[in-house]
Length: 108
Image 1 (cartoon, helix red, strand yellow):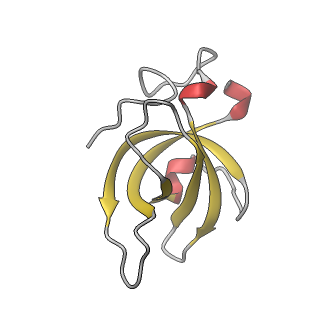
Image 2 (cartoon, one colour):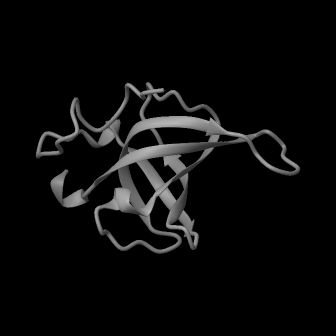
Image 3 (cartoon, helix red, strand yellow):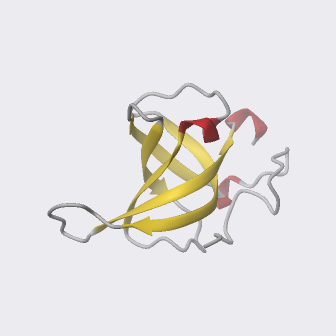
């Protein structure tokens, strides 16, 4: 599934990037396989995500940007798929496997 909301109309990010169309992610951690977990803390009004969301994406999507737990970054979500939760869950938090485009705040 492709998300219609993002930081711009294409994959090239330039000075016209609108911060209100980006997702703000707080990094939860990075596992040994290079999978980043991040909580969505701000999303566009027209987002397909509802409620509390955690996204999982490849560290390589960050374009060599170094991040640590607790860091907040901006991303454009290019595609996503909801993933099932293994084990007990309250079903209040949704988990998504995503392909993201890192947006450097300097570019905003």
